[in-house]
Image 1 (cartoon, rainbow, N blue to C red):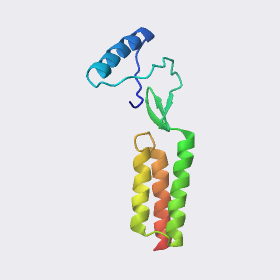
Image 2 (tube, rainbow, N blue to C red):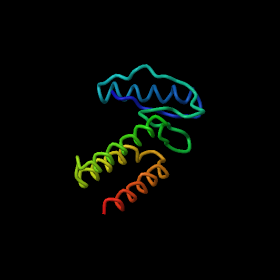
Image 3 (tube, rainbow, N blue to C red):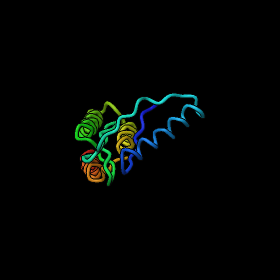
Image 4 (spheres, rainbow, N blue to C red):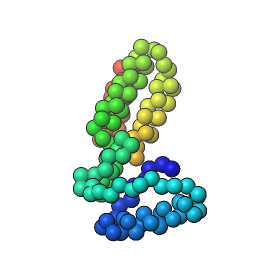
Amino acid sequence: MDDFVVWASSQSELKEMFIHINNYVIQKLRLSVKQPVFGKTAVGLPFLGFLIKEKGIYLLQKSKKRFSKRMSEITDLLCKGSISEAKAAERTLSAIAAISLARTNRLRNKVCAKGEQLAALTV
Protein backbone atom coordinates (compact mmCIF):
# COMPACT_ATOMS: atom_id res chain seq x y z
CA MET A 1 0.00 0.00 0.00
CA ASP A 2 1.22 3.52 -0.70
CA ASP A 3 2.17 5.91 2.06
CA PHE A 4 -0.39 8.32 3.42
CA VAL A 5 -0.38 11.13 5.93
CA VAL A 6 -2.92 11.89 8.64
CA TRP A 7 -2.96 14.92 10.95
CA ALA A 8 -4.77 15.24 14.24
CA SER A 9 -4.81 17.41 17.33
CA SER A 10 -3.28 14.80 19.60
CA GLN A 11 -1.35 11.53 19.57
CA SER A 12 -4.29 9.71 21.13
CA GLU A 13 -6.55 10.90 18.29
CA LEU A 14 -3.96 9.69 15.76
CA LYS A 15 -3.72 6.30 17.42
CA GLU A 16 -7.51 5.96 17.40
CA MET A 17 -7.58 6.86 13.70
CA PHE A 18 -4.87 4.31 12.99
CA ILE A 19 -6.91 1.55 14.62
CA HIS A 20 -9.93 2.37 12.41
CA ILE A 21 -7.84 2.72 9.25
CA ASN A 22 -5.94 -0.49 9.96
CA ASN A 23 -9.16 -2.44 10.59
CA TYR A 24 -10.71 -1.12 7.38
CA VAL A 25 -7.63 -1.89 5.28
CA ILE A 26 -7.35 -5.43 6.68
CA GLN A 27 -11.05 -6.32 6.62
CA LYS A 28 -12.33 -4.54 3.51
CA LEU A 29 -9.27 -4.29 1.28
CA ARG A 30 -7.44 -7.39 2.51
CA LEU A 31 -4.19 -5.42 2.66
CA SER A 32 -1.80 -4.50 5.43
CA VAL A 33 -0.59 -1.16 6.73
CA LYS A 34 3.03 -0.42 7.62
CA GLN A 35 3.84 0.45 11.20
CA PRO A 36 2.83 4.08 11.74
CA VAL A 37 5.28 6.86 12.49
CA PHE A 38 3.92 9.39 14.96
CA GLY A 39 5.62 12.73 15.31
CA LYS A 40 5.23 16.47 15.43
CA THR A 41 5.32 18.45 12.22
CA ALA A 42 5.71 22.03 13.39
CA VAL A 43 7.86 22.92 10.37
CA GLY A 44 5.89 20.79 7.93
CA LEU A 45 6.27 17.33 6.49
CA PRO A 46 8.52 16.70 3.50
CA PHE A 47 6.63 14.30 1.23
CA LEU A 48 7.26 13.40 -2.43
CA GLY A 49 9.15 16.61 -3.25
CA PHE A 50 6.68 18.84 -1.44
CA LEU A 51 6.56 20.36 2.04
CA ILE A 52 3.12 19.91 3.54
CA LYS A 53 2.23 22.56 6.12
CA GLU A 54 -0.92 23.59 7.89
CA LYS A 55 -1.38 26.56 5.55
CA GLY A 56 -0.70 24.73 2.31
CA ILE A 57 1.59 22.61 0.18
CA TYR A 58 4.91 24.07 -0.89
CA LEU A 59 7.63 22.90 -3.25
CA LEU A 60 10.87 21.83 -1.58
CA GLN A 61 13.94 23.86 -2.56
CA LYS A 62 15.53 20.88 -4.35
CA SER A 63 12.31 20.39 -6.33
CA LYS A 64 12.35 24.06 -7.34
CA LYS A 65 15.91 23.67 -8.58
CA ARG A 66 15.03 20.49 -10.48
CA PHE A 67 12.02 22.25 -12.06
CA SER A 68 14.10 25.28 -13.06
CA LYS A 69 16.78 23.00 -14.54
CA ARG A 70 14.13 21.12 -16.51
CA MET A 71 12.71 24.36 -17.88
CA SER A 72 16.21 25.48 -18.92
CA GLU A 73 16.77 22.16 -20.69
CA ILE A 74 13.51 22.55 -22.63
CA THR A 75 14.46 26.11 -23.59
CA ASP A 76 17.92 25.02 -24.75
CA LEU A 77 16.51 22.18 -26.85
CA LEU A 78 13.99 24.55 -28.43
CA CYS A 79 16.63 27.20 -29.20
CA LYS A 80 18.90 24.57 -30.79
CA GLY A 81 16.02 23.32 -32.90
CA SER A 82 16.24 19.86 -31.35
CA ILE A 83 12.53 19.91 -30.49
CA SER A 84 9.54 21.66 -32.02
CA GLU A 85 7.52 24.40 -30.34
CA ALA A 86 4.69 21.91 -29.88
CA LYS A 87 7.02 19.42 -28.14
CA ALA A 88 8.48 22.19 -25.96
CA ALA A 89 4.95 23.26 -24.97
CA GLU A 90 4.02 19.65 -24.19
CA ARG A 91 7.08 19.17 -21.98
CA THR A 92 6.53 22.53 -20.28
CA LEU A 93 2.91 21.70 -19.48
CA SER A 94 3.98 18.34 -18.10
CA ALA A 95 6.59 19.94 -15.82
CA ILE A 96 4.13 22.59 -14.63
CA ALA A 97 1.46 19.97 -13.96
CA ALA A 98 3.92 18.06 -11.76
CA ILE A 99 4.35 21.07 -9.44
CA SER A 100 0.88 22.61 -9.69
CA LEU A 101 -0.28 20.93 -6.48
CA ALA A 102 2.03 23.23 -4.53
CA ARG A 103 1.84 26.96 -3.94
CA THR A 104 4.04 27.84 -6.90
CA ASN A 105 2.36 30.86 -8.49
CA ARG A 106 5.51 33.02 -8.33
CA LEU A 107 7.68 30.27 -9.78
CA ARG A 108 5.19 29.51 -12.57
CA ASN A 109 4.81 33.24 -13.38
CA LYS A 110 8.60 33.53 -13.58
CA VAL A 111 8.73 30.60 -16.00
CA CYS A 112 5.93 32.08 -18.12
CA ALA A 113 7.73 35.45 -18.25
CA LYS A 114 10.90 33.71 -19.46
CA GLY A 115 8.81 31.85 -22.05
CA GLU A 116 7.33 35.11 -23.31
CA GLN A 117 10.83 36.61 -23.60
CA LEU A 118 11.98 33.56 -25.54
CA ALA A 119 8.96 33.75 -27.84
CA ALA A 120 9.73 37.41 -28.56
CA LEU A 121 13.31 36.52 -29.49
CA THR A 122 12.34 33.68 -31.83
CA VAL A 123 9.74 35.67 -33.79
